[in-house]
Image 1 (tube, protein in one colour):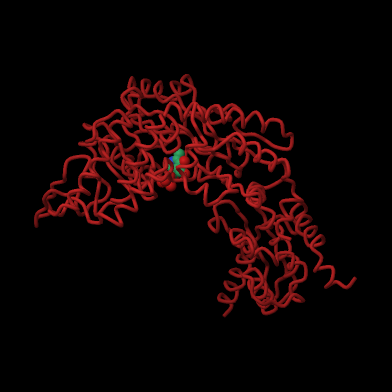
Image 2 (cartoon, chains in turn purple, red):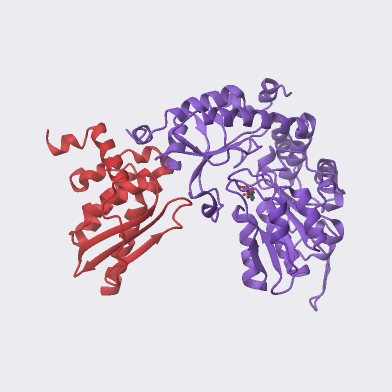
Length: 406
Length: 151
Ligand SMILES: Cc1ncc(COP(=O)(O)O)c(C=O)c1O
């Protein structure tokens, strides 16, 4: 098990906010000292651009920046040449979806996804539907957002050229059977594309074992700096897809007649000056998580999540939308109280959660509400925090939610 | 107690908000061509409110709304529909200006705002200011649009 007390000492946010219960890790996570140090050191000791300078500091940054690919090669069990840095998972998914649609799909071809997806994983498909005539179809899920292999197999047909889902959905924390889905997709000759924003930070991700084709995730949701993301793809597929944005650094040559020669992957996806300090900090975050151990993190969050769900089930004034989730995420409403009113009341008790539709705006058809409260844990949260949270939720009533204004 | 004293009592202001939230006034749309309407879906991620108003010869004859929203959005919009109905657009604009001042934590004339003073502390929770103004911004835009089309 984890030594959570020791882990919490690595996160200055706790010392600086002693009464804060931070249960909004699905939105963004706190940063440990090694990540902060990596970013601050870049500013204080070794600032420069990358891939352009012949002086020692610039070479150091080249090593640290490109060296982060080696860290992720270990983190994901892939080749460093398959790791491209982006600005967030939204950028990664846009890049993958545009590239895959343009390279591998023709008008009328189908992509299969679910109605549980985050805007960043579905709007880019709507865009290629509008611009390239690709058709979006949905795999049915149960009321907790989970896809079954049987339903998925039934939804597959000749026209499907790609399948694209979140490994863990952002509202209900439904964990999809990605490995099985990848096998079925491949049997039908379709690509398997995964939004790993909510899964990669919380469980071991082995892209070879999952046997998927593309994966995107954000740095800020895994203890890393904001403005960082990863685009992973099988190298031979990365070679075939066209980047969405062109410019400096990603080109090798270009000529007056318009001919362009791009760099090899992954560099061809990294246009302009990247978030150098962010990527270096993201490398520190991945090292930090690997040191604790992704399997340990996952096991602890499962145990804490189970305890949390159990305690929430004691409260009869709430509706739980994901009672069977296996993740550290509890999505609920207090009966007759609007989600934002609940969240704002909890805020007066020092609790940070997310309320609203969490950018998954076509989920309401599945769970029958378009607004929920999501409490999302990370490995630095504790059983005592869960207890304090549950006591606070018991106090949520319409009267109390309105009283905060007086 | 004088009306003004009542509107200083936090318990009463809280009741006003809860009452308008549970039983919103003028809460259904007519969707007739006699009404101008504003759908405030993009104002925030959560609240989704439509306001419609019938304005003739510079008088707001009717205001209605519908949608899904939090206590503050629902109650503030419900109160607004009561307060502005029957007012001339000039009167309404003065009330709206006072309301926006109050919600921004500035000076305002409480006499003009009646029950809307229930929202006087919302400025202390900056994240909720958009809730308290969503319906009011809708009517403000509808009035401006009606004046432009008549001007
Ligand atoms: C499943 C999923 N996809 C995409 C995103 C978008 O993340 P970002 O804002 O970092 O691009 C999120 C985050 O909210 C998410 O949970």
